[in-house]
Amino acid sequence: MYIEKLQDHSIFYWLGNIFTATPFVTVRHGFPANDLVAPTVAITKDTIEVFQLELGNRTKTQVRTWIIDVFGVNEGQRDDYAYLVFNTLDNPITVYNYDEGFPPAVSPS
Image (tube, rainbow, N blue to C red; front, side, top):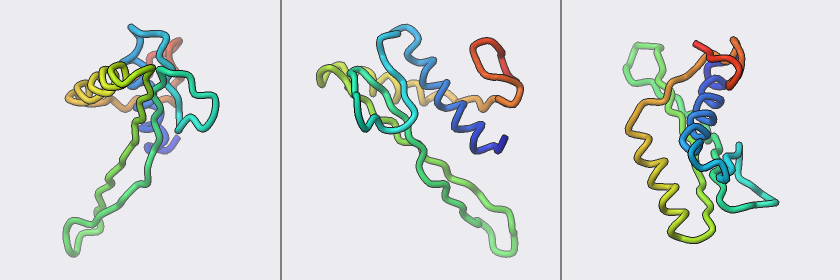
């Protein structure tokens, strides 16, 4: 599996783990175009930007961006969940090798 796909899976499961204490929150891939049930947190991957940082060096740096949309029953709930995600971003997100299996049955390396 490509590293970018492993990153996509890892950030989705990371987001789902944030809300394990609140099982009524739906975590989805992509923007919920129809059948939106609040509260929902949706994650969408954005484009991959590639930069060369040094003349004469063919090594490139990737910048990846994900968009996290938070929908709550009211403004307060939306803000609480958005702040929860924002404050959790202080810690690094581990990228797992999902070629070894998917959670929760398997804990990939």
